[in-house]
Image 1 (spheres, protein in one colour):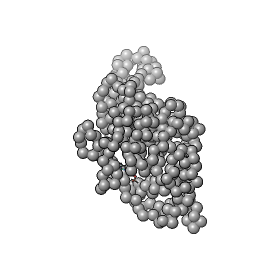
Image 2: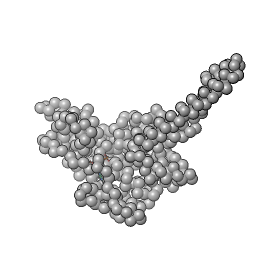
Image 3: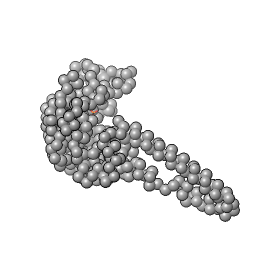
Image 4: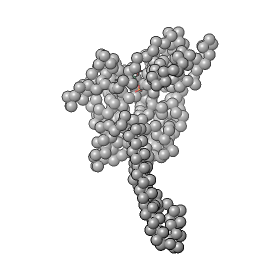
Amino acid sequence: KVLDDNTMSGFLNESETKKLPQAIIIGVKKGGTRALLEFLRLHPDIRAVGAEPHFFDRNYDKGLEWYRSPLSILLEAPHSGEAPAQQDTNHNAARCHPAAETERQADNFFLSAALRYLLTTAVLLRVLLDGELMPKSSDGQLTMEKTPSYYVTKEVPARIHTMSKDTKLIVVVRDPVTRAISDYTQTRSKKPDIPSFESLTFKNMSAGLIDTTWSAVQIGMYAKHLERWLQHFPSEQLLFVSGERLISDPAGEMARVQDFLGLRKVVTEKHFHFNPAKGFPCLKRPEWNSKPHCLGKTKGRTHPNIDPEVVQKLRDFYKPFNRKFYQMTGCLRHMNQ
Ligand code: A3P
């Protein structure tokens, strides 16, 4: 999760600059967003931040400059001893006791140095832990990030539009029932004591009433969330990637993505190797002649068996949402209509 190749070379190449992202993978959680980002990072014209910055949902109050480069804010900030109120106090003290002024200045210097050191360390730690730092990129390169919660967060479409109305938006969608089970599997891996999937699915089990407030269910109502995006962006600016095809035909899906981003078709079949033990395509860098690299253990978890009746109830629940989503986008046709 920490500093990756992209970020490190970003630190090293001085001729490049940090830019706001021109394209964002906005969702959906457990759709295959990590796989897509890692596939895109094989492309020499893409620079992508490795971790999820969560700028437009959790860190928006920090401002765009923080998003572009949180370190620049610190480095450009005036010394804390220069705050006007403090200067006034020092000035008055100097009028009365010149020696006290020198002492106070020295105190301020050390205090401010210590404070800056602490702040820098704190920011560096956050950058290392959270990675919210745009990598440097050259003129011909696209800067990207992925934060899957953007797709379902009400305020985000307007905020991204305010940053740039031209931002290209990519959504990886997957059968919403499998997505919900995948989401549950992830939560259970961190909190093994949570109730069963079956009991969380229903508000009232005997009445068969689905709990649409449960995020695992809610995220899969793709059409409902899409309506909000289309209030701010024309549909041509959104690309829907099939999470299923990203596994069965990664090169084919990557051809669509590169086309949408206006990139040369560099990532092709030769970059993928299907690993039968993992059950997923892994990445190859033919130019490096290295061994294929698979995504980590948290991608491709074994799902628990879910009561087939519950699965069917969820399939029925999603039918109208899938149909509407298909009408809006042409995606998810293969899913039970
Ligand atoms: P599961 O762990 O439920 O199988 P995200 O990155 O958005 O959290 O999505 C995780 C999902 O990506 C995984 O869900 C897995 O099915 C899917 N995926 C797609 N391509 C993959 C790949 N090449 N390697 C591993 N997982 C992949």
